Length: 142
Image (cartoon, one colour):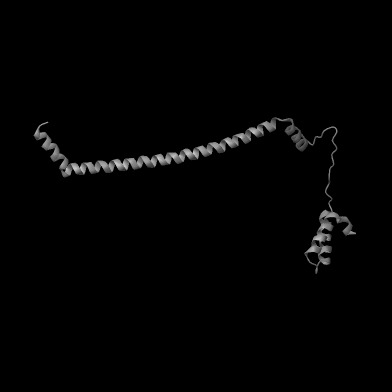
């Protein structure tokens, strides 16, 4: 290299224009690095959320597989036949309870009797009458 070229290069590096260009380039480099860092952070968050969603969906998938296997079993079919078709096993005995139409009027009479008897009593007596009403409804009506 000649002395002219080396002086030109030294003068170029010492110039304000070159310094301004270097500063602009450095700022652009820092901004681009920050932008890429922000994008990386967002991608990491998205990956984490997708992984948690995958785990949740795998759990749901397992529940669905368990339900499918249960529905394929004879126990489920038998239970559905009992409930929806009112079927029973040959050796099984079925008891049917019918609701008495006078239950509502009886309960009203019992409540009136209880209220008149318990006007001045404390909670312990109230519990006693509640249990008495529960076990012996018909006996109190007479």
